[in-house]
Amino acid sequence: QVQLQESGPGLVKPSQTLSLTCTISGGSIATNFYYWTWIRQPPGKGLEWIGYIYYSGSTTYSPSLKSRTSISRDTSKNQFTLQLNSVTPEDTAVYYCAGGAGFADYWGQGTQVTVSS
Image (cartoon, rainbow, N blue to C red; front, top):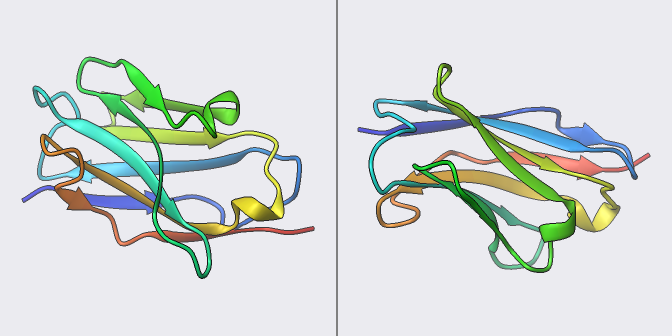
């Protein structure tokens, strides 16, 4: 069973870069046709898709966040990473990593990130 675990700072200052890592266990980041995805949920709002890195290494981002987002992977560590630049308080959310051939078959438990000075 694939399991995902998010890690990273819970507090980020405005204008700085938010960086989160998702560690995969029970499966490989290189599994054919798997998507590895970042999703967030701001307080009181619905889920928002941020972007994904495909098993091939290609990436796709939400148009609304594309200019500030980078998703990368470390195959040796079986991890993928989200970087969101120039954050504002509007980026405060629970951030989830997810993965699978069905786009988000498996989910991490989520991690709260607050943007505040």
